[in-house]
Length: 141
Picture (cartoon, rainbow, N blue to C red):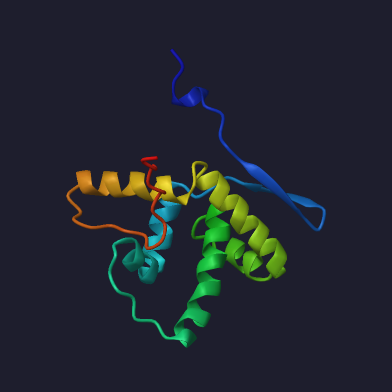
């Protein structure tokens, strides 16, 4: 019977300046690093209000994107990877971010959020929500 060691990892790649960058997606360890460093993201995931000014958003979003790019390319919490991510052209950052989301959540953000909510509920966490990220409800027609 096949086991975990028989599963081929999912990944994608993106060429930047002639170098193929492997996108592995964000692992549970990567999520832990991100949620620890960015309490605003953690608050959003738990449905808590986040009081951020436009200046705060402009200051924190690039750092969060750098951290996500590092985590999604197999280097969660690595300051060198984040520095490289920070200096990539915006187009490459966005393309990598899109591929990271695709590899991390192959069924989409909504089903990922639903599964995460179910797991957290089973662990006794009362509320976890990602605003605007719920799966579409099945139609009755």
